[in-house]
Image 1 (cartoon, helix red, strand yellow):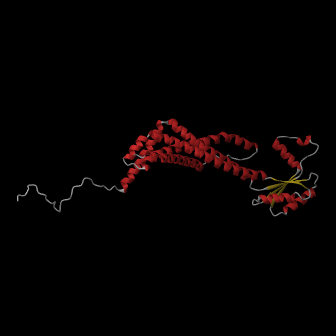
Image 2 (spheres, rainbow, N blue to C red):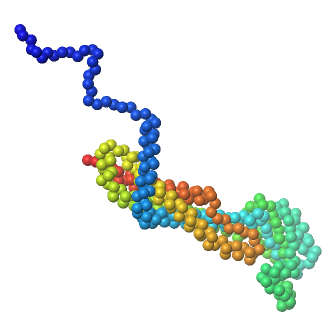
Image 3 (cartoon, rainbow, N blue to C red):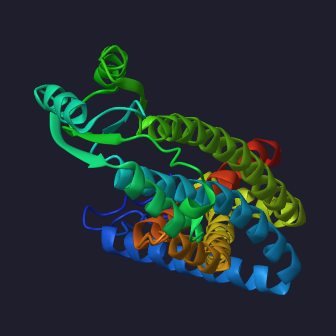
Length: 334
């Protein structure tokens, strides 16, 4: 039987079958370089896009800046009030007003009785003449005593207590000393400081609540801005996901947009706080001079300024993250 000219020959053992495609292993260094390159390109592209729409960028930055500046100003004001309270709270005092017709021996007897108390550190006597002279000097009125038939001020014992003396102890001493002979009344000089600290605690809670509400408003503002940017680039995002782009790849440019919004908002907040500080520093200095005080108004320190930048960037990126995450699922290619 004749054999056909075309015969099926088996491939030799040394020959390798031909492939239509081949796989390539990419090293971690190449992946890292590509990741860094995309971060750099995303940051540059988002900044360029915001520079093309400056009004939108400025308005969003102002919202974030005002959101951060108001709580910061409240916090600085509370810090200054706390500083003022601590300056006066160094040594609690009780003012013991004696009867007007008391004799010198009775004053010494009362002073010795108070000196034996365990919490007492020092007792200063202010005579009626000294009290009236101090009043004339502070009020700018000279010759007041000449217009009066008699000095209306009683003798005063200023009792300085230990710094560790608690408020409950002050109230107990006030109640007990009122019952002493030759004592007309007893006043706690630090009572207004305690009220001040209670007001500061209330102010701190109000500041936290205000910061939370304003922060929520800033998140909504950034999220709405990012949402508009996503809608404008919907077709681009869908095409990118068709060719295999991950959610992180699509999300990255918008996160950098939130970063630039937050950074600008933090800078705006610093400028607003500094402007507010310099608008009141002169009146406060003049008021302190009237009271012969060396009180210095506290301003914006480096830590607070850095915190404003950090919180601003956090708000911007968080708002962008929430906005992008909400829309990525709706833009999956079908």
